[in-house]
Image 1 (spheres, rainbow, N blue to C red):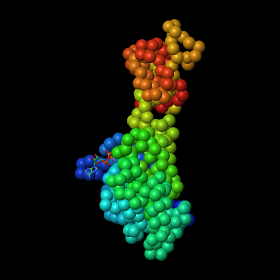
Image 2 (cartoon, rainbow, N blue to C red; image 1 turned 135 degrees about the horizontal axis):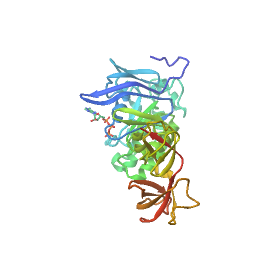
Image 3 (tube, rainbow, N blue to C red; image 1 turned 90 degrees about the vertical axis):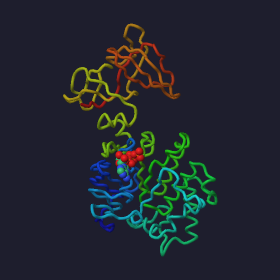
Image 4 (cartoon, protein in one colour; image 1 turned 45 degrees about the vertical axis):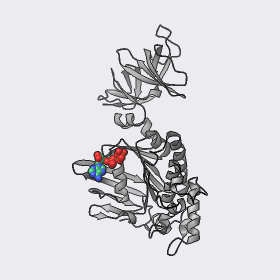
Length: 387
Ligand code: ATP
């Protein structure tokens, strides 16, 4: 195990080669993921890919089969070693229904502060001896004193936008407010690591967007390292410092939102993280390939490249006056017909019929062409080529 007093700063989270099976079902296969202190990582993947299992292995609710997990430089799980959840100093914010219904908002938030060994002292120790950024991490002695405890509760309620609502009961709150209380309760004991398991999934769209931003801010203010599990790519891309894309128990790609979006490692990641489609290569190799949408620049057009991964915003359109030519069109533009238009307000997804009968989608602004219109289409930017 790594000693917190050693010269290097330990990783906040170190998951190395972790595998976990439930009978014949492999939930995690050789998963490795490392987080620095204060980082926010989203684990993104479809239902059943193993996201929750990964979170439960970190929190200590599941035993791992192989690999290891270290938190703040301390090994908490190795085959044969399994620290129980209450000794890992990890806070979990679950999907919903997490509040004690018979306790007031303040009592809910203060719950972890009253519990032994899961207070400010533990959090400070795991952060490598540094006090909390807000100065309250230095509470010494045998627990959180009553005055400091009340102040911490109010501070956490303020952090999640619920100042002054401590005396309410959970049933007097909206779903969004209840999730805010759950977050405040998780943050109250200064946990070095916060795990969020789809905490917004029960909320309606506008509330979700608002809460995402507030949660991000609260976590940053608290200086906590956090892992968010979600199947919502918009949520992952908008909130996280890095996104870990998961499929069938394996991490396919870990990178910044921009890296994962602009340079997906494979077609699966490309189509899961945002809109994308595969366009077949009709000719050529190297860094420029011919496709039914004309020539496309690619990153990695080796001899095996058979398709390019195309984002709809890379497809550009101008009206086709009938002769297939336009001064505005890009080089190698092809003649297409608009088949359908999916209007979203600020933009639209236009499905185009290409020569040879196949289709492709283009993202346009708020004034898309109409079905039946003839358009010249071409691809701009660099695409990834896949076998
Ligand atoms: P969701 O988004 O639907 O919650 P997930 O990505 O979180 O999915 P997990 O809940 O981690 O996925 O499940 C991964 C796989 O392991 C699934 O096939 C699931 O059925 C299986 N699994 C999870 N927990 C158990 C368990 N306790 N016993 C048996 N199988 C399990």
